[in-house]
Length: 162
Ligand SMILES: [Cu+2]
Image (cartoon, rainbow, N blue to C red; front, side):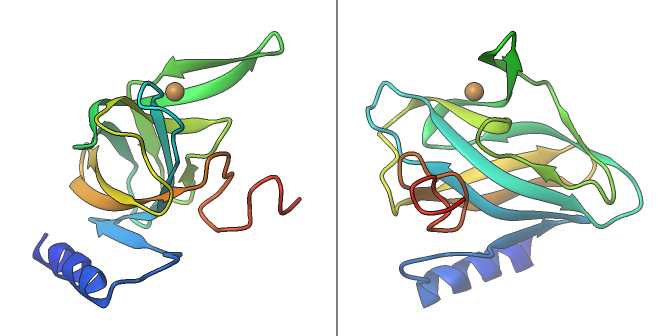
């Protein structure tokens, strides 16, 4: 816990200005990578955050809760195509097994932020707490990418690549 806070304080002090890529937060055997969210256009819109979780341990763990001070309620969601229509469902918990990284990305798993206290603006950051059954809790800093961004790295939006 203490190491994590020190690392966060250091990164804030150094002030990674324009782009923060390759952010990592460790908790137990788990590594949370590249947390990002899409900017929201209006205050009424829910936010969506994405990240990657890897398990470097020997035993599976489970992501059981998410929370952020910027939202009244954060939920684990999965988007799925059903009869050609994209639908979202809330997910109770997500297993993180060794050697099977869990990737939250547009069109799939995401962290839905309901009741945003203010719109998420491009370039801003906000804290997101993840709680795992065994490893405990970790707070990561989510970077807000442009509306419509498809990944944590700039330029990976539909307009610019693939
Ligand atoms: Cu959702």
